[in-house]
Length: 461
Image 1 (cartoon, rainbow, N blue to C red):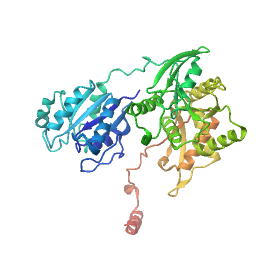
Image 2 (cartoon, rainbow, N blue to C red):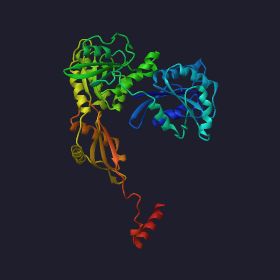
Image 3 (cartoon, helix red, strand yellow):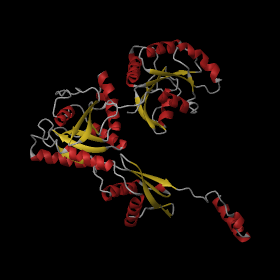
């Protein structure tokens, strides 16, 4: 699963700046004023082919009362969640007593800690970091987060310190299926029904499952691994500390899975949190089966209402299979495996370049790309760029200007024509370099053409 890196330290040492640099975003508010970050903020980053999760935290000021105390609690929760802690200090302030207090507590966590000295721009790095050796956290890493100086070396060092990543099973076997959803929708009951035994605690109370549990089993000769996850609900509703730990585990399980079964409660409405979680699954590119649980006992009018609501609120998931089940009584549960295998086969499908290019030519003939800035976008050929989800790379010119409506047309058309079910696809566009873009043909113009060009340029200027 993705390693988790937490950024901790005093206020205004540059944690949010480094967060934005590591995630290549501007998600964290950066102002030259302490205390701007209060809650934990999560972001995804990538070093080469290695993905990771970064947690930005509020500053640790040493106060235990009021807002500062709540911010500190959030920071220490992030430390508990993380695999690696980047302990940030400030070269301008030097080593402070508060830095020493934080270092003392961090040492007691037993986590891997990397000491970072930020804001070294304008200083001699070796001289500045010398005093920070007194913290006893190994060799300090000098960086200038605002300029990106030393950041790549820092993240390389952080990821190198992690042990070889293995799933909870060592190497999780077969098709990995993550069971996700809000609390108390019947995820653990569904897991027990699939396995045919009481392998996980199922109780009529939200939040029974605390961690992601990996359960291997075999069915009809096929090896599977079920991942039972904690319920994910809106952050404002999360009160218990243990539940705060559980959310990131559930999101990691989605990234680790081949197929996700999203469990909805038929006796409850589709909430904003359900849609948010489905959006996260879509962004992760995972194959998806939507399971509507607690279907037994509903009359026909209620069933029709739920089906209408699903079509209305989840139009972006038209590719996903929907199955109405009762995990408690076992109705429809056996059919889920057919859907899972179909979705997995679609997610891992391979297509030849001639087939994709021929299909692209047909789709362009049926519906031409629009004209942008007086020139029509040309899509020339396509090839497969990856699996789980299938990635289709389309080459052409002016592909940066392809509008969202035409991207949706290609998305739906490729899904239909390639006979893919239960998985999204990703379409990436690449524009070839124009070998003549930097060349000027002034030497080939006649004197009359050069004079005409000069007159035209006067109007342009």
